[in-house]
Amino acid sequence: MKFFRLVWKNAWRKKIRTSLTILSVFVAFLLFALLSAIGYAFRGGVDVADADRLIVIEKVSLINPLPSSYQARIAATPGVESVTHASWFGGYYQEPQNQFAQFPVDPEDYMAMYPEFEMPAEQREAWKRNRTGAVVGRELADAYGWKVGDRIPIQATIWSRKDGGRTWEFDLEGIFSAENARGNTALMLFQYDYFDEARAFAQGTVGWYILRVADGADPVQVANAIDAQFANSPAETDTSTEAAFAQSFTKQFGNIALIVTLILGAVFFTLLLVSGNTMSQSVRERIPELAVLKTLGFGDRSVLAIVLSESVLIMLIGGLLGLGVGWVLVQGVAEQFGAFLPGVYLSPASLATGFGLMLGAGALAGIFPAVKAMRLSIVDALARA
Amino acid sequence: MADVLARLEGVSRTYQKGKEKVEVLHNLDLEIPDGDFVAIMGPSGSGKTTLLNLLGGLDRPSSGTVTVGGKVISSMSNSRLSKWRATNVGFIFQFYNLLPVLNALRNVELPLLLTDFSAKERAKRAGIALDIVGLSDRAKHYPRELSGGQEQRVAIARAIVSDPKLLLCDEPTGDLDRDTADEILRLLQALNREHGKTIVMVTHDAQAAEYANRTLHCDKGTLEARAAA
Image (cartoon, rainbow over all chains, first blue to last red; front, side, top):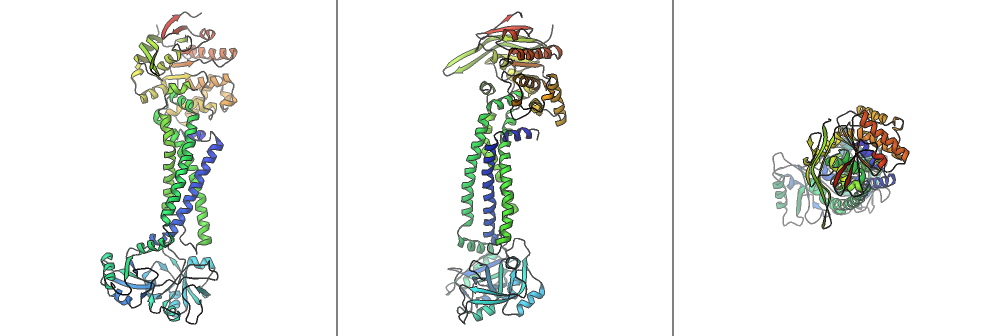
């Protein structure tokens, strides 16, 4: 701390150069914050996945349906505690850009499978009683201003009705929230029985099954037993953990994690070059001053620490500003577009990673000039004064 | 007779210049008594600054020993030598070598950053040093806001702030006009006479050397004593 004033004053020796460097650090960390939040949204399902839940999908593709008759056979498999199902509806509200997830489900079984979805008991009962009833998550209700009692028309993109229409109308009977604040509640659930009866085709099928493994049962053995049951049938299955399912679902949009990593890698590589160059220039310009410090008794380590601290300080100023502004923007995006991109969130882990990157990048950018300053020969350097 | 503060015994210093070896100092013996004010004169390249660097522990002899205050500094490790410099020797350069980003008070305070003094104590001591050199009213001024003479006074304050016994001055008036140079030299003389500082001053200026108790002439790596005028 005794050296802070010296470090601070040295960092601002060339105000424009330091400001520009800080600006480039700011942009890099702003990007880091935004991309981390988007990456989090895409793998949100993975993070909140329950280790005891398995997902059964059709072996070739998630798009292919599975027969409803599988439910009883899956339920009878040793190690399975309970089972339910869901299907992809793929509709939109009013305008095609208003897309969000809608699943026809069995209200009783599905809500039992997902106890993290919390809803008043009377709303849950009302939904069960009403065949055209639906419930939505808090994020959706807030995004569209829906309240219990509203009639919500959803335009189907896949499932036309038997009467040829593509508009499905639902009565909003309840609004649920997630126990985990990061749980996805940009979701609409409605009765499978109504959906299956009214749809024009594919009756008697579901999109996928979700099952809970009994206490003490080995999830791998349970998954293998289920897939073995349906081997060589017209609809073979592939059973995996909820996390693996969420991951494979996310990969439909491309390998988001890899894309984010590549972009950030390029940004930080450039940042290291820019800030490393700034520090090298800064040290080169004041070699005689560094020699004076050493003459006054500043040891090699002190000089190394002063130069490194300067580099880390510049990185921290720009980085914290970038993360701060990023956090504010992410909050805004989450509020405005939560329904379309649920789970956009700058997690504490991302913030900690960002902070670590600031320290790491600062140290890396400053290490070569700092070592050069440390190894400075006083006599040679003073001769340049 | 005063105790010997600094002693050079059989000191040689050789530099490698390309493929050639250049001997700047040759088998030099020198004793500097405590409280002395010595001027070292000589032509450029005669080894004056090298001698000063050896006395201040900025350079090491190729052979021989350098002892200051009873400690053989020529065999100290780099880190020990840094610590030793911080408390035992003050340096005054021709071009002042103040840090432009710090004001006068903060420049003077620099050597005290290596001590355990509190911020308040450091500021107090730096203020006293500035007072001794007559610049307490310029404490908040940056080097660019000071004249050459004032900058050199700040540099002297920085050299004495940790109260070292030995002050090493390399052409301290080389960048100043006559009047200002005389002011600086009178200040050095006062530090020698009133504060008991031992001063070794390298200079080209015969008039400057007159302020010293004695003058040594350095030529071709050897020293020769001449009586002060």
